[in-house]
Each structure stands twice: as structure tokens, then as C-alpha cells.
Length: 85
Image (cartoon, rainbow, N blue to C red; front, side, top):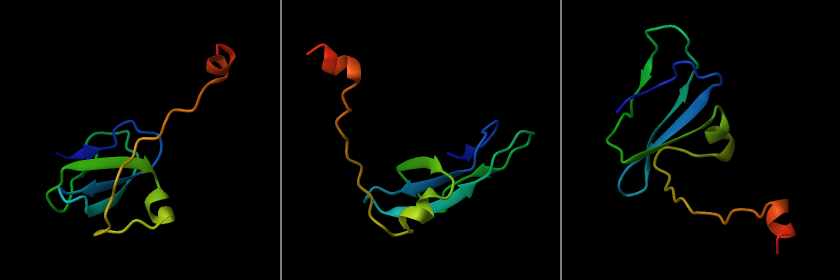
């Protein structure tokens, strides 16, 4: 699959990972408003991808070959949840 930035307002970074949870590619994507927009495809086979605010991947120090693991955080209680207890 390929990704594109048609009508996206902000730059995004994308990281692709494989079945062993290793980053196989990362790319910076720029907004596009006119057809045809560039497409972004991973340089290697992948099983998942995540898009984040542009510049965040380098800010957190993610590199190709790094291992990724996603964990679920408990949702924070809202003020209305606390008031109903």
C-alpha cells in the first residue's frame, strides 16, 4: 500500500515496521493540495505503519532497525467520571 497527503494540512512522518517489530523504513511526508500528489511507499515489506506529527520520529530518536512495541494506556478519567463516583 502507498500513502499520500492529499488535503492534509500539516507535515507528517511515517514509520513502517515488519512482522518482527523492527522499523524497516521511515519517511517525512509533506502536505499536498493539487493532483497528482506524491505517494509514499515503504522501502521493504511491512505489516504496520504509524503516522505522527512531522519531526517527531527524529525528536524521539527512532531509526530503521529499531524494535517497536505498542502498549495501551488506560484512559484518563474525565471530570464528569470523577463527579459521578
